[in-house]
Amino acid sequence: MIRLSLQYYPEDLQKAENRDFKKMRLREISSSVGILRRQIGAVEEKIIREAQIPPAGFTDTKWLSADEKRKILRQWTSFVKNGFAETLFTGSIYEHLHLHCGYIAHYNKHGYYGEYWGAYARDLHRHAKEDNFSVRSVPAAFDNWKSFIRQFSIWGDYRDIGAAMMMVLKTELECLEVDLLKEVRGHFDADAINSYQLYLAERQNIQARIESLRKEAEELENGLAVLSEEDHRRSLDAKYVELFGENFSVDSVKPAVSQLFLI
Image (cartoon, rainbow, N blue to C red; front, top):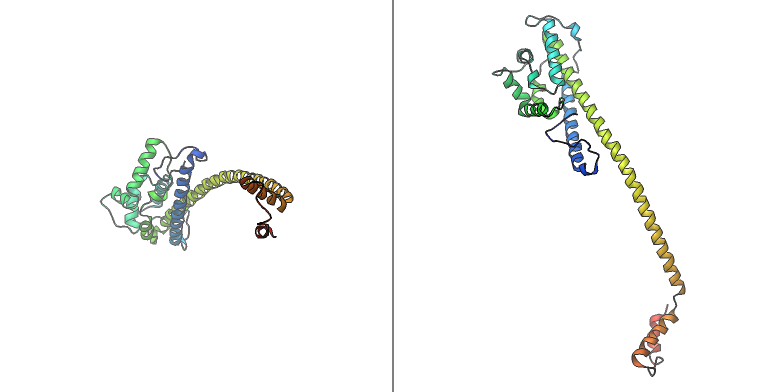
């Protein structure tokens, strides 16, 4: 499982009781995909004009042989693919970065690692080891990526390995984006099924309401058909006779109240 944070998510995010966790996960993926795309764009700008030389085509230099370049590239690839684990950030990678890629030297490789990956990456990998889950090249672990990519220099005798290192980074970031979007598609498909069930239920409810209203309207129409002014007038007369007796003269007030029943 790809872990992008220290959040502990339930195994099945599709269950109704885990709805809030699912919302958190989708927001987290949305943020991560946005960062990944910016990272990929920054790397692409670095290598857009660079010829991609396969490791077999690397050349010897004064300070690094072709074999040493290939060894560093393999170490870098392992470092990137395993979520920037500090245990995989070798002295050879550090020396190459600060001697041949345009970075200033730090007190040691641990200081350099802390500058660009930092405490979050260390905590993430510590939790990964404790809880036995895998870590990919997650954006939050690459804390200072803007500065790292901006400073990374591809030049001279180290152009071959420099372009290759950036391509390794770009490829891994792209693969992570693809995997995250696959997870999103899984959530979307599950939501689509649930949404369709809700749609059917809503249609049934509306149809039942329509039938209920239609029946009510039919009853009202039947009541309207038998409703008459005479019935209402007789009811009124009876009411007043009951109150004031048989001697109450209905005819004496009829001209005035009859106006109420004019249509």
